[in-house]
Image (tube, rainbow, N blue to C red; front, top):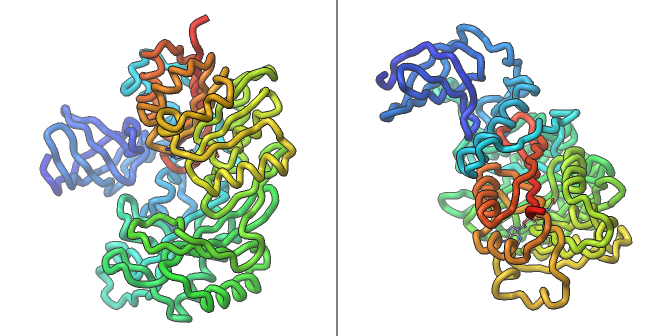
Length: 469
Ligand SMILES: C[S@@+](CC[C@H](N)C(=O)[O-])C[C@H]1O[C@@H](n2cnc3c(N)ncnc32)[C@H](O)[C@@H]1O
């Protein structure tokens, strides 16, 4: 096939990156705008020796799993790739992604993967959305051809897939609530009317960078966090007054200020303009304090399902020492603390450690100890804390997407806990680390996927490893 040629393809499945895959005449085709089961007429736009990239131009026979996407931004926005795929089919493919990762990367012949625990409500499930400001919104091809289009000066929304410099101006998002959509629209409108400038990733000038909205699902508390490049207190105060009048459900407004060039929505400094500067959320019987910079699972209802799986796998009897590695705001530590003798949480972000300590105090949990630091250092060079705490019977580890540093895996293995419960949002890095644990003698007993992120190709998994009896 040549670039620009059309071909009829039957979509067989989804790749590890969530792309629709078809095979024909020894070639693998990655096809945009298609779902498994579709027969499409696709136009090839990139060819390599064994594979090609194509875009579906016409759906010749729709898949029984194809559904109408709800969102007006579907396709342009990088938020939900799979809104056109029925939810049960999404779960089937997510399970396959996990099985493939453990087989291909982990080297497990027949990985013991359970059926994913799906979301009862696959829309409006997020308790946090992070929007980015841009000077110019992303235009569709059709809009670019319509020359009369007037560009807004302030765009606010989500990234175009794989383009961190391009932003789709979001009117509505089906992942957070309508309240959050209202805040988004108000902030954009006010920014335009007041002529506020937008930070440019090219010139590094301009004021507005990100808008982060956190909305606790159980308590209803709402945080608005405006991330800016400089400290302009008068503007922030006026914006806060207007926002709180307009959306009375807002319980706190904070301003994170960062001059860093990298586009992360965390500031070097933070100022509170309204309310306490944090929100509270409940998981099970526990209430958690969440600051702007702290990690907290973004799907509250599924976080409870996830932690129930962790609890089941840990199967504590009350006498164990538990280490909760990458502990965030201490959620897993506290969730399991009643069943353990002692829990030690380790986490690198200072505000998360402070939140974890407050959370323990507020929930009257007295057997949890939290240590700040990079796990790699805490387990290698900065290990004096190990003299104060007994070795673990059970380790729960929940690293970020890039998984555990090899040294962390090696040190966990040296501590020789009877059980390791490994929570992950990336099956590829989890499978890589699982291979190391298996080589060190641990047996992979079970992998339970929990769908925290419907309509995306992301899946959370909990894997249980034990030592041979
Ligand atoms: C996926 S979150 C898990 C948090 C927590 N277990 C939960 O369920 O809310 C990963 C956490 O690891 C922390 N982290 C990332 N890299 C780290 C490192 N090298 N050492 C210690 N903590 C780290 C992050 O700040 C984040 O809080």
